Image (tube, rainbow, N blue to C red; front, top):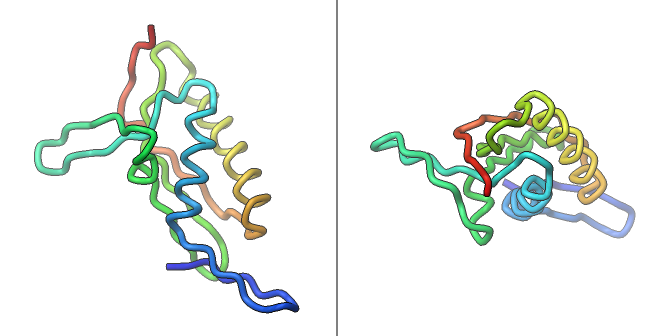
Length: 118
């Protein structure tokens, strides 16, 4: 699925993978986020994704030119999940809207694990 933006010069199409990668780089820079998570449905294991595959832990959907983003994250041990989530939502919403010019309707966060950071 692609995001469509019409302007006087023509049409711009943004692939959801581009938005997912951009949102992933923003997310890992947020305080308290260790990284994106991938869930193996077969055995229920949660795996921390490498920087190259951040978009695998993110699902972007576009409905009537409004963006919805689902994050599957691993957070740092000892942080307030509520505060980290609020910060992530606010930062991603602002930066993705600025990047695409399309409103972000919703950001859903699924905390899949907690990791102790050295």
